[in-house]
Image 1 (cartoon, helix red, strand yellow):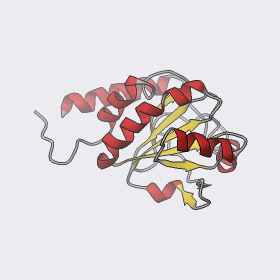
Image 2 (tube, helix red, strand yellow):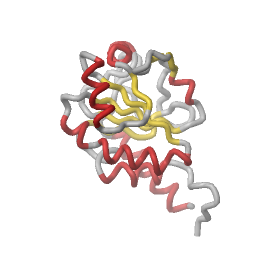
Image 3 (cartoon, helix red, strand yellow):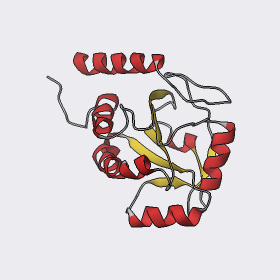
Length: 179
């Protein structure tokens, strides 16, 4: 247990020194709380970030024109399946200009996690989170505080590092015993 917490503290501390994203018109830092925002999913249903309070939320800013974003989909599928029972919710924040293209990719890639419509994502980008790189993944803790940020193809939330980071950041599975 101590090793896990120490690793996470070191990881989060190191990330606080690295590049970060912006919330409320500026670049936030690891440990800062993301302000609540509203978005509409691909089916037209309204959601709020606060609807997922108490969960770990992975915001995945992506677009169909972003090859590294598409390359990351298999890792996100594994993360969704493996960590859902540990409290993880993935929200895709699509930035395509037209929802039809994004809808086709969601269908073609059999993406099952919640998706913010492109128009909603654009509003979030303008007013809340100033994402500059794609893909950008932001892991939020249960109180919407930023735990980890990855921009582009950089670890710790991209590629094979995604699963390792989630395993360290999320609580252990129910019934697991630490030695």
